[in-house]
Length: 283
Image (tube, rainbow, N blue to C red; front, side):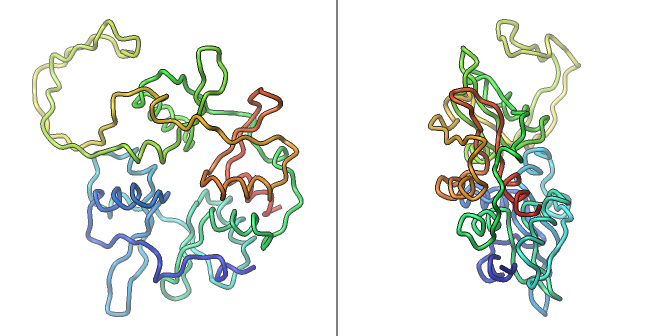
Protein backbone atom coordinates (compact mmCIF):
# COMPACT_ATOMS: atom_id res chain seq x y z
CA UNK A 1 0.00 0.00 0.00
CA UNK A 2 1.37 3.41 -0.96
CA UNK A 3 1.17 6.69 0.91
CA UNK A 4 -1.09 8.06 -1.84
CA UNK A 5 -3.69 5.40 -0.96
CA UNK A 6 -3.68 6.21 2.76
CA UNK A 7 -3.12 9.96 2.99
CA UNK A 8 -5.65 12.74 3.35
CA UNK A 9 -5.43 14.76 0.11
CA UNK A 10 -4.72 18.48 0.18
CA UNK A 11 -8.33 19.33 -0.67
CA UNK A 12 -9.50 17.71 2.58
CA UNK A 13 -6.70 18.87 4.90
CA UNK A 14 -7.53 21.55 7.46
CA UNK A 15 -4.67 24.07 7.37
CA UNK A 16 -3.73 27.31 9.06
CA UNK A 17 -2.45 30.18 6.92
CA UNK A 18 0.34 32.64 7.55
CA UNK A 19 0.07 35.11 9.06
CA UNK A 20 -2.16 33.76 11.81
CA UNK A 21 -2.54 33.30 15.56
CA UNK A 22 -2.62 30.43 18.04
CA UNK A 23 -6.37 30.97 18.56
CA UNK A 24 -7.05 29.73 15.01
CA UNK A 25 -5.07 26.54 15.55
CA UNK A 26 -6.48 25.90 19.03
CA UNK A 27 -9.99 26.10 17.56
CA UNK A 28 -9.12 23.50 14.90
CA UNK A 29 -7.60 21.14 17.47
CA UNK A 30 -10.59 21.44 19.79
CA UNK A 31 -13.18 20.94 17.05
CA UNK A 32 -11.46 18.12 15.16
CA UNK A 33 -9.31 16.42 17.85
CA UNK A 34 -6.27 16.69 15.57
CA UNK A 35 -2.76 16.23 16.98
CA UNK A 36 -1.37 18.99 14.76
CA UNK A 37 -2.27 21.40 11.98
CA UNK A 38 -0.21 22.06 8.81
CA UNK A 39 0.70 25.68 8.16
CA UNK A 40 0.73 26.98 4.59
CA UNK A 41 1.49 30.28 2.93
CA UNK A 42 -0.77 31.27 0.02
CA UNK A 43 1.14 31.87 -3.23
CA UNK A 44 0.19 32.45 -6.85
CA UNK A 45 1.04 28.79 -7.52
CA UNK A 46 -1.08 27.42 -4.69
CA UNK A 47 -0.47 26.85 -0.97
CA UNK A 48 3.19 26.44 -0.02
CA UNK A 49 3.81 24.10 2.92
CA UNK A 50 5.74 25.80 5.76
CA UNK A 51 5.50 23.56 8.85
CA UNK A 52 3.28 21.97 11.50
CA UNK A 53 1.89 23.22 14.80
CA UNK A 54 1.14 20.50 17.34
CA UNK A 55 -1.11 20.46 20.38
CA UNK A 56 2.01 19.76 22.50
CA UNK A 57 3.61 23.01 21.33
CA UNK A 58 0.47 25.02 22.10
CA UNK A 59 0.45 23.68 25.66
CA UNK A 60 4.21 24.08 26.17
CA UNK A 61 4.35 27.65 24.79
CA UNK A 62 1.21 29.33 26.13
CA UNK A 63 2.58 32.88 25.78
CA UNK A 64 3.52 32.66 22.09
CA UNK A 65 0.84 33.94 19.73
CA UNK A 66 2.40 34.07 16.26
CA UNK A 67 2.14 30.92 14.14
CA UNK A 68 5.56 31.45 12.59
CA UNK A 69 7.13 31.08 16.06
CA UNK A 70 5.11 27.94 16.90
CA UNK A 71 5.83 25.98 13.72
CA UNK A 72 7.90 22.80 13.84
CA UNK A 73 10.03 21.44 11.03
CA UNK A 74 9.13 17.84 10.24
CA UNK A 75 10.22 15.48 7.47
CA UNK A 76 8.18 15.11 4.29
CA UNK A 77 7.46 12.07 2.14
CA UNK A 78 6.61 11.31 -1.48
CA UNK A 79 3.14 10.01 -2.39
CA UNK A 80 4.70 6.97 -4.07
CA UNK A 81 6.44 5.75 -0.91
CA UNK A 82 5.04 2.66 0.84
CA UNK A 83 3.04 2.87 4.04
CA UNK A 84 5.86 0.94 5.76
CA UNK A 85 8.28 3.66 4.61
CA UNK A 86 5.98 6.23 6.22
CA UNK A 87 5.93 4.24 9.47
CA UNK A 88 9.73 4.08 9.56
CA UNK A 89 10.00 7.82 8.92
CA UNK A 90 7.50 8.62 11.68
CA UNK A 91 9.37 6.47 14.18
CA UNK A 92 12.81 7.79 13.21
CA UNK A 93 11.77 11.44 13.51
CA UNK A 94 9.05 11.22 16.15
CA UNK A 95 6.56 12.72 13.69
CA UNK A 96 2.84 11.97 14.01
CA UNK A 97 1.80 13.74 10.81
CA UNK A 98 4.05 13.72 7.76
CA UNK A 99 3.35 16.19 4.95
CA UNK A 100 3.23 14.61 1.50
CA UNK A 101 5.20 16.89 -0.77
CA UNK A 102 6.06 16.25 -4.41
CA UNK A 103 7.04 19.65 -5.70
CA UNK A 104 3.98 21.06 -3.92
CA UNK A 105 1.88 20.23 -0.88
CA UNK A 106 -0.12 17.07 -1.75
CA UNK A 107 -1.64 16.12 1.60
CA UNK A 108 -0.91 14.57 4.99
CA UNK A 109 -0.26 11.00 6.11
CA UNK A 110 -0.65 10.39 9.84
CA UNK A 111 0.07 7.77 12.46
CA UNK A 112 -3.68 7.13 12.49
CA UNK A 113 -3.63 6.50 8.72
CA UNK A 114 -0.95 3.84 9.24
CA UNK A 115 -2.96 2.32 12.12
CA UNK A 116 -6.00 2.23 9.82
CA UNK A 117 -3.98 0.37 7.19
CA UNK A 118 -2.87 -2.20 9.77
CA UNK A 119 -6.39 -2.57 11.16
CA UNK A 120 -7.84 -3.15 7.69
CA UNK A 121 -5.14 -5.62 6.67
CA UNK A 122 -3.78 -3.31 3.95
CA UNK A 123 -0.43 -3.30 5.76
CA UNK A 124 0.34 -6.73 7.18
CA UNK A 125 2.23 -7.65 10.33
CA UNK A 126 2.16 -10.81 12.48
CA UNK A 127 3.74 -9.20 15.54
CA UNK A 128 2.28 -9.21 19.07
CA UNK A 129 1.85 -5.94 20.96
CA UNK A 130 3.58 -7.32 24.05
CA UNK A 131 6.87 -7.19 22.13
CA UNK A 132 6.49 -3.45 21.46
CA UNK A 133 4.58 -2.09 24.46
CA UNK A 134 6.38 0.07 27.00
CA UNK A 135 6.54 -1.26 30.59
CA UNK A 136 6.96 2.34 31.78
CA UNK A 137 3.53 3.86 32.37
CA UNK A 138 2.87 7.52 33.11
CA UNK A 139 0.41 7.76 36.01
CA UNK A 140 -1.32 10.33 38.18
CA UNK A 141 -3.73 10.32 41.10
CA UNK A 142 -7.39 10.66 40.09
CA UNK A 143 -7.87 13.34 42.75
CA UNK A 144 -5.07 15.56 41.48
CA UNK A 145 -6.02 18.94 40.00
CA UNK A 146 -6.22 18.90 36.21
CA UNK A 147 -3.50 21.58 36.02
CA UNK A 148 -1.09 19.37 37.98
CA UNK A 149 -1.80 16.39 35.71
CA UNK A 150 -1.21 18.59 32.63
CA UNK A 151 2.22 19.58 33.97
CA UNK A 152 2.93 15.90 34.54
CA UNK A 153 2.19 15.14 30.88
CA UNK A 154 4.50 17.95 29.82
CA UNK A 155 7.39 16.82 32.01
CA UNK A 156 6.96 13.16 31.06
CA UNK A 157 6.73 14.13 27.37
CA UNK A 158 3.87 11.71 26.71
CA UNK A 159 0.29 12.44 25.54
CA UNK A 160 -1.51 10.48 28.28
CA UNK A 161 -1.55 9.61 31.95
CA UNK A 162 -3.22 6.62 33.61
CA UNK A 163 -5.25 7.68 36.64
CA UNK A 164 -4.95 5.66 39.85
CA UNK A 165 -7.46 5.46 42.69
CA UNK A 166 -6.80 5.45 46.44
CA UNK A 167 -5.75 1.79 46.25
CA UNK A 168 -3.27 2.41 43.43
CA UNK A 169 -5.44 0.66 40.85
CA UNK A 170 -6.20 1.99 37.38
CA UNK A 171 -9.40 4.01 37.40
CA UNK A 172 -9.19 5.90 34.11
CA UNK A 173 -7.02 7.56 31.50
CA UNK A 174 -6.48 11.26 30.75
CA UNK A 175 -5.04 12.43 27.42
CA UNK A 176 -3.85 15.64 25.78
CA UNK A 177 -7.06 15.62 23.76
CA UNK A 178 -9.09 15.73 27.00
CA UNK A 179 -7.04 18.72 28.16
CA UNK A 180 -7.27 20.61 24.86
CA UNK A 181 -11.05 20.05 24.87
CA UNK A 182 -11.48 22.09 28.07
CA UNK A 183 -8.63 24.60 27.65
CA UNK A 184 -9.32 28.22 26.90
CA UNK A 185 -7.15 31.27 26.29
CA UNK A 186 -7.42 34.11 28.77
CA UNK A 187 -6.02 37.62 28.61
CA UNK A 188 -5.61 40.31 31.22
CA UNK A 189 -3.34 41.55 33.98
CA UNK A 190 -1.80 39.46 36.68
CA UNK A 191 -0.31 40.69 39.95
CA UNK A 192 3.05 38.98 40.45
CA UNK A 193 3.98 40.50 43.81
CA UNK A 194 2.98 39.62 47.37
CA UNK A 195 1.56 36.37 46.11
CA UNK A 196 1.28 33.74 48.79
CA UNK A 197 0.43 30.10 48.17
CA UNK A 198 -2.52 28.64 50.03
CA UNK A 199 -0.83 26.92 52.96
CA UNK A 200 -3.88 24.72 53.51
CA UNK A 201 -3.69 23.21 50.04
CA UNK A 202 -1.89 19.89 49.72
CA UNK A 203 -1.08 20.84 46.13
CA UNK A 204 0.74 24.09 47.02
CA UNK A 205 4.19 22.76 46.21
CA UNK A 206 6.04 26.08 45.88
CA UNK A 207 5.39 27.37 49.42
CA UNK A 208 5.22 31.02 50.40
CA UNK A 209 6.91 33.67 48.31
CA UNK A 210 6.77 37.40 47.81
CA UNK A 211 8.49 38.93 44.80
CA UNK A 212 7.63 42.61 44.92
CA UNK A 213 4.49 44.19 43.54
CA UNK A 214 3.94 44.66 39.82
CA UNK A 215 1.42 43.83 37.12
CA UNK A 216 2.22 42.11 33.84
CA UNK A 217 -0.03 41.57 30.79
CA UNK A 218 -0.77 37.85 30.44
CA UNK A 219 -2.05 35.61 27.71
CA UNK A 220 -2.25 32.02 28.79
CA UNK A 221 -4.11 28.74 28.57
CA UNK A 222 -6.54 28.38 31.44
CA UNK A 223 -7.67 24.97 32.68
CA UNK A 224 -10.67 24.20 34.90
CA UNK A 225 -10.11 23.79 38.65
CA UNK A 226 -11.57 20.27 38.75
CA UNK A 227 -9.84 17.01 39.53
CA UNK A 228 -8.56 14.49 37.00
CA UNK A 229 -11.51 12.19 37.74
CA UNK A 230 -13.89 14.78 36.24
CA UNK A 231 -12.18 14.81 32.84
CA UNK A 232 -10.65 11.35 32.41
CA UNK A 233 -12.18 8.41 30.56
CA UNK A 234 -13.16 5.81 33.17
CA UNK A 235 -14.33 3.11 30.75
CA UNK A 236 -10.81 2.05 29.80
CA UNK A 237 -10.10 -0.26 26.85
CA UNK A 238 -7.26 -2.71 27.63
CA UNK A 239 -5.21 -5.38 25.85
CA UNK A 240 -3.09 -8.34 26.84
CA UNK A 241 0.47 -8.95 25.67
CA UNK A 242 -0.72 -11.71 23.31
CA UNK A 243 -2.97 -9.44 21.28
CA UNK A 244 -1.76 -8.96 17.73
CA UNK A 245 -0.77 -5.56 16.40
CA UNK A 246 -3.74 -5.74 14.04
CA UNK A 247 -6.18 -6.42 16.90
CA UNK A 248 -4.76 -3.50 18.87
CA UNK A 249 -5.03 -1.29 15.78
CA UNK A 250 -8.68 -2.28 15.36
CA UNK A 251 -9.40 -1.34 18.98
CA UNK A 252 -7.72 2.04 18.52
CA UNK A 253 -9.74 2.82 15.40
CA UNK A 254 -13.04 1.59 16.89
CA UNK A 255 -12.65 3.60 20.10
CA UNK A 256 -10.79 6.56 18.56
CA UNK A 257 -7.88 6.31 21.00
CA UNK A 258 -4.11 6.58 20.67
CA UNK A 259 -2.99 4.38 23.57
CA UNK A 260 -4.24 1.26 25.34
CA UNK A 261 -3.14 0.08 28.80
CA UNK A 262 -1.77 -3.46 28.77
CA UNK A 263 -2.89 -5.71 31.59
CA UNK A 264 -2.25 -9.16 32.96
CA UNK A 265 -5.42 -10.16 34.79
CA UNK A 266 -6.34 -6.95 36.60
CA UNK A 267 -2.74 -5.74 36.92
CA UNK A 268 -1.46 -2.83 34.82
CA UNK A 269 1.82 -3.99 33.23
CA UNK A 270 2.43 -1.54 30.38
CA UNK A 271 0.94 0.67 27.72
CA UNK A 272 0.55 0.19 23.96
CA UNK A 273 0.64 3.45 22.01
CA UNK A 274 -0.26 3.83 18.35
CA UNK A 275 3.43 4.39 17.60
CA UNK A 276 4.13 0.98 19.13
CA UNK A 277 1.62 -0.58 16.73
CA UNK A 278 3.24 1.04 13.68
CA UNK A 279 6.66 -0.08 15.00
CA UNK A 280 5.43 -3.65 14.47
CA UNK A 281 4.91 -2.78 10.79
CA UNK A 282 8.27 -1.10 10.41
CA UNK A 283 10.16 -4.23 11.55
